Length: 450
Image (cartoon, rainbow, N blue to C red; front, side, top):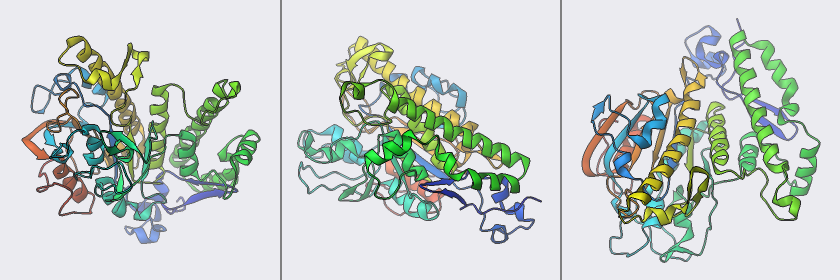
């Protein structure tokens, strides 16, 4: 019988630490008894949560299914999700009323992002006296992150300022950060995939300068080289199925390294004497996808169980010329009911959903025990603005994918009473994760059926 392994096992080498995916040898049955204690501390597959955000609202006519319940037809914006049909639900009617002005005047974009996971009215200030509220991801991380190396992982394609005014007197902190550890402390996200990779795999060395790191990288083939011997030792102690899983995992890690090397070594602005961050793809789609790949690896290795992923900062005026939309996203969102502009907004929305589909399909393909990562994950996707032209914060676009280990029943269009706080959904998620919370922002009670 293969030797039982601890779920917390790491492969270590000089300057590198690699967590392993969940193997059959880590499950309680691997020790030949029914108790996890005799399996080196093995535990059942964990549950995870990811919160994904897109800015400037959605063209809701092409987002909202016409039918309620199961068996709904996919509207145009959701068509890219056909490969995971039945594994997500649309929740209509939810609101974040604390993102509205409520006497504070303009600034809907800053409030939309700051409020999305907190349900709290952000203090209108461009100074250091910021205030929002603890976000649902950090509440989940305080519970689910107790057994992981990283309590949570915050990623996005744009960094954004952490000071100054960005939206009608609101600090840039609000429009750049979705995650809040306390009412006065946001959790900045990382946009450079190479730095995310280093954080996940501890590829850096304490006190190492950027110059020294670059020199070392030029003479190193792979982070896997540092842990090669330990990896071979593990492979000798597990069964054939686990050896295949390890081979697939190490291949995925190496493929990410190759892609990162390509981004940082290709002829680019650096060759012209200009500064360009290492590891950041020039193409937006590739940037989104490599961050999605890193998110999947972080869950697969149980490096973290909670993540936020911001596709673009709120109010982003990014051009989408690569899909035939050269205008800025924010400018187009103020469409004034112009049909041509609405069609372009819908094209941007569909592009974003295509990237969501990439992530969900990868989670669904990644096996873990007798299920998939998607079976044991809840992925919430949405925006803190409903229609970009109206700047409304009710009837928000909200999608919940995965089952979270049985927390949710996907495959439906659920229509809630108009104005139901989105935070009520968060309370239901937290309860399902085993960390019930009585109050979050403007919540009025847990949703009974998600």
